[in-house]
Length: 304
Ligand code: CP
Image (tube, rainbow, N blue to C red):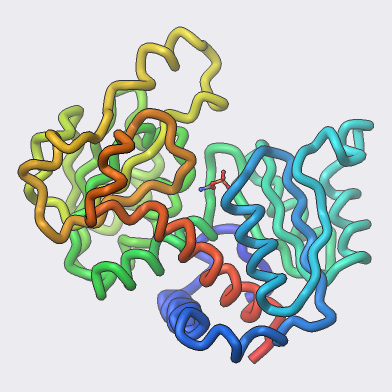
């Protein structure tokens, strides 16, 4: 693997290896503190981010390396009209590895053809977010002890939520994984995912608009934010944004070992009172993101 653009770039074996490295980093952080000495990570973020950008930066610093980059398009020469291709070609000369977020779907693929250093997709439009998926897989493995035999409820904006698209694509490769897809009609998962990913691989799934209906069956509940920035019409966003709010009442029938996840940022879709519930895993999930990104940097730089 040279770049990570799509979660499908990784085989199940490679994902399992990354998870094992991340678990080892959690256990023995000192073993890794110098592994990237002299290496530089560039973070090119053309869209806002807290977790992805800062966890990448923290990951590289924890590995003993250095970081440079920008956190918004306006503070780079993109504001003067420079193309993504030219930006990465130049930045590739300043660093050893690049992680990039861009509002245009496919921008990281273009970038990967223009530079000699590895490119990591840190989110491209409403398309993919493979390092969030690696984060999610590490979270599930650590919190549930397995990646198979799971019923996963995915709730909210399944149309524009790129984390959902990457998660479903990754999880279908594990045995006996079922999905309960909870969303309003307007925010259902895209047809290509239903046809090319779920149907084609004979994956069991149910679509519902009711968050309560299957709550007692879920091993994982993956909540998502309605993606305001992807709507063309603000009135539609306002109508849909508060349809699902997970609170203590909704969890009454849920399993005792349910794992509640959310890629964050959260707006209203999980009540802050749920944060105190021991089934709430979303802040731990954000922390797991740092460890799996450390493992990914090591893998892409071929550092043992
Ligand atoms: N989960 C996630 O991608 O968060 P940020 O947008 O803060 O990076």
